[in-house]
Image 1 (cartoon, helix red, strand yellow):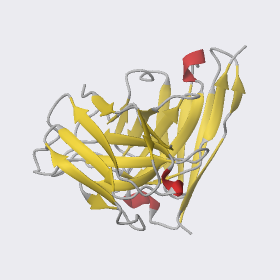
Image 2 (cartoon, helix red, strand yellow):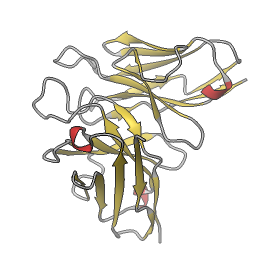
Image 3 (tube, chains in turn brown, purple):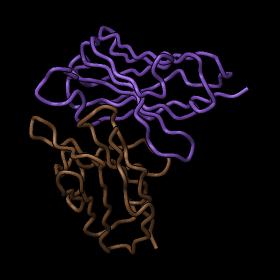
Image 4 (cartoon, helix red, strand yellow):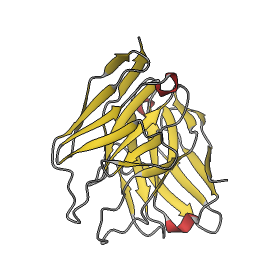
Length: 112
Length: 128
């Protein structure tokens, strides 16, 4: 099974400053169709998860452009260019390239 | 409005059964694979099960295989999760999630792609 490892697990950030979360998979997430099914989810306190980024770097509808995704193979990054108060929550990476689906442990973003 | 609404959660004794439902609206339900994802109190996300848009293909996490059954009724736009032989470790909020793919076991891509719509969840508590 593929294991997803996120770092850091907690990230205190100053409002207006950038934030970065890393996600590493135990195997390559490149599917035989050439796509990489790595997505990022945000879970605000008391809310269900919501999709931010899909297939490494595609922003989902309605997601602010301060969120961006990058990476390839086994190493991926979610970046927030300027953190806002509404960004507080837990961020998860998720792989769907291979069953069973796997999530990272989550990274808690909080304001300093 | 595009939405998913789970129901059926509650308190159940170890060894008991429960059936969760997820009512979908605002999109062509039968065109998309669906999944159940759970989150134990204070913990991260765990994928539980998935089903193709047609309902003909299903997949399970090892932790629930043989105890849980996923199904769907496309005429009612509803997804189900039958949970038997429940254990304390099954205690969690259960979310249904819509996938962007139709769920094809032999398609050009994987069965699931990414979850673009989530319900608000329903809490299942297994305790005596």
